[in-house]
Image (cartoon, rainbow, N blue to C red; front, side, top):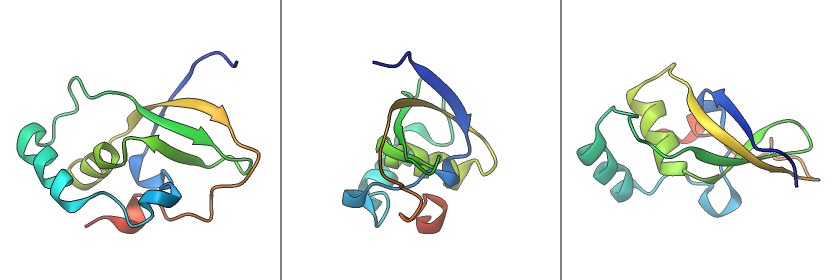
Length: 100
């Protein structure tokens, strides 16, 4: 197992997983915006995988990444790289591609 790796990245650049290729669930996003607004205080780290092409794909945190990208453009978020994949992920849409 690799040591824990944390990065600060622009959430718009994170790639969506296949099962969430359409982006954040609109109802869940609205709930998060209503509860947390544009605050990132206490927000859990977004978990990602690094593809063989170097791109990062979200494993857990699509809605959180979308909320920050939408309400705080240009602000970075903390991500934890869980593992390196043997396949590229850059072909999947990014959070920025699917912003509501």
